[in-house]
Amino acid sequence: MRRILALLAILLPTLIVAQTNSIAPSQPLAFTHATVIDMTGAKPESDMTVVIEGNRIAALGKTGRVRIPKDAQIINASGKFLIPGLWDMHVHTLREDRLATFFPLFVANGVTSVRDMSSTLANFDMLKQWRGEITNGTRLGPRIIAAGPLIDGPKPVWTDFISVSTAAEGRETVRTLKQHGVDFIKVYSGLPRDIYLAIADETKKQGLTFVGHEPNAVLAAEASDAGQKSFEHLYGVLLGCSRDEAALRAEAVEEMMKPKGLTSLAARWLVETKSLDTYDEGKARALFARFARNGTWQVPTLVILRAFSFYDDSTLTNDSRLKYIQPQVREEWEKRKNIFLKSATKADIADRKRLFQKQLEVLGAMRRAGVGIMAGTDTPNPYAFPGFGLQDELGLLVKAGLTPMEALQAATINPAKFFGKEKDLGTIEKGKLADLVLLDANPLEDISNTKKINAVVLNGRLLDRKTLNKMLADVEAAASKR
Image (cartoon, rainbow, N blue to C red; front, side, top):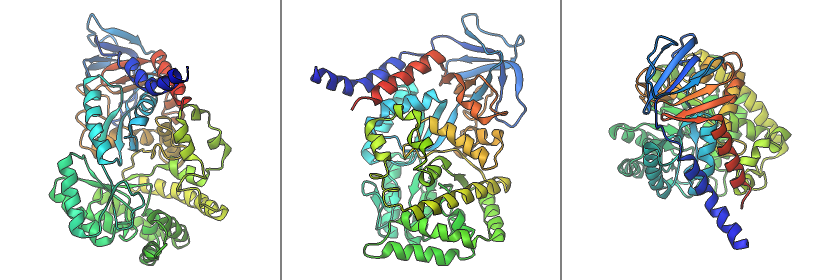
């Protein structure tokens, strides 16, 4: 019996994928009488019909005026709201042991596309296979755009990625990663300035973009001017708004370089807290204008910033959604084991709470200044739940000052623009790929209504509420097994 149970624990995730993969677009699909929020910025259109043939939107218009194929499956969407599929623009999922549980959680929450921000080369090779399977319909999962291994400096935070010590090594790494097929380059906090600028230059030569952690040794304005396309976690933004930015960055680098010095992330938190007392409104306005002019996007991952500030909050530690998370991942979330939390003192947490409130304020100011914002979670770091975390992020974006429409655009049309995929994704328009979410309530009235999912259309395949519930139940069962 023990052997049978052990075997089931191994096979159950595979069985989950096999069961959900049986759903395929065998006939045209039509939603009638829906209210369409197309994400172009136009007002919602009521009483609309959307016809899907294959994996594309074949037609849309007022119900009664659109031809519906005779063999179509018709869904009466009266009183419901249709939005494009959602993106999570900052995830870390590319490990085989997470695949079968994370992917269904994304899809069940309407997340039909993700940007994976780092993986080992071995995992990236597996990703190529998964992407092909997702595209041809033999594996259920979101569309994936991925970085491969991140590039850090001589004293890396993570030893399983790439550490470079010279500008020449940085350039060679960019060329190697391009040959390996990565979609973009991710840089990290510990890169020295000269190496960072060499990587920036080489990505341009290789026709790639680069994103990630704006390094401690590089001014925020410099990183924007160098072409870093997105800043993650708002790292570097508050420092860039400090009248003492150069001195604080020098302090961070000095702390990193000590024989037993702080990691680049710990050094960043130390000086960012100090930057709160030297925040300069004029410098902030100039920096935000620069971001807007340069097309420097922000992926704030407010979900994880909140978790690092309020990790002891019972609403996090007792979250009912923990039932969907594998035991080994839940253990990684515990303070005693998590690299970001285990050494944090009460004073550190108090500082982070203060920092988080300022980050919300600054994000709203950036949006008003025209800086592009995209929704991401940093899944699966502590309490950034796969799929569910994106729903949480939308709520936090609104709390930071975005309108519900702007928050939704941060998870739909904005990522499509970022990747140059507006012709296929991001809005509900004729000819676009059929990644859609049908909601039971209006998300423009209350952003939390994005959680009221009636159905998901993934690359033309209909996943109704019954199917989504089965997916969640299977993930819960798999997560209960060790």
